[in-house]
Length: 384
Image 1: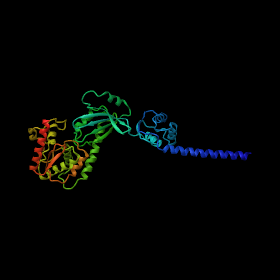
Image 2: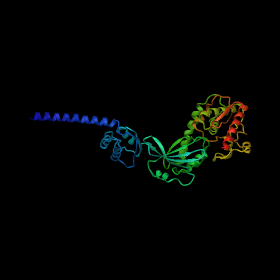
Image 3: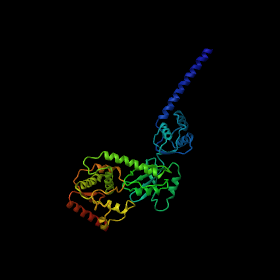
Image 4: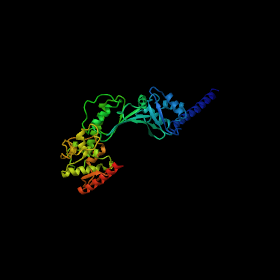
């Protein structure tokens, strides 16, 4: 009798172990299998939340078929206590494994609201936008110039949300004064700026920002990135350039940056200035004249006068020989690269062509014809 009972118990145990192994294997397959979500969603994990609340939200949105299975999977993966607050883009068909990894790894939020502060050459602009999970494209809620009166209510609303992300976008060709004044105007940042960074030493780029970040720390990031770019560009320079130092390269790059907004033209513009330097010709570039007037503090906002073109300043390249003494703006990476690797041309002139770009010329006669074409385009534009 005891033998039969023991045999039956062993059989039951074996069956139980077999079933348990099957359940474990099934659970593992469910953990890694494609999820039921048929359209991406933005999952918000609030500070102080837990896996139970998150699993219910996921089940309600159709991202997981079973909230209980999700919680078990989180415990099985030993990540149940590692939840990180934030907004997460959960993509179509995301597995439980992928979702758990997302919400426990943390890092920058991948969806939700983003506030972008743009420091441009002509204006400041604040954009409040949200990611549409279905298209993975940002939808603009509002944009405004923070220097022009009170901010829209939606800006304050989104500023109050803890998972809102912040980013600063610095345009190529802005001056250091414009950057510092722009940082002073943004209420997200803190701290004073004791000294204006030298012209040209701030890297135009996009920077992640946190509420309360020190302005000086952000400027230090910009300077560190620009220093790396300057060194890399100088090391990659071609032979035979009429540039004696990194500083001269930076000055030339800043002039290239201010002369053209067409990426494909940068190396052509660089070739004009390199050719002029090689031939002992004055650079005769308007942006240097403008910098001599404004010292980088704002935009001139009008055309240059003949008296200003003839006026003597250290930056007026219609008057001085060679390069001006300092950069005239903060050049981007592409302009730095163009300065040390210009196109091989015989161009020594260029003028606007009416399309946003420039017409280049090797001789004065050719240049004069291009200028005449541009004057006719200007006259037509003014008459319309």
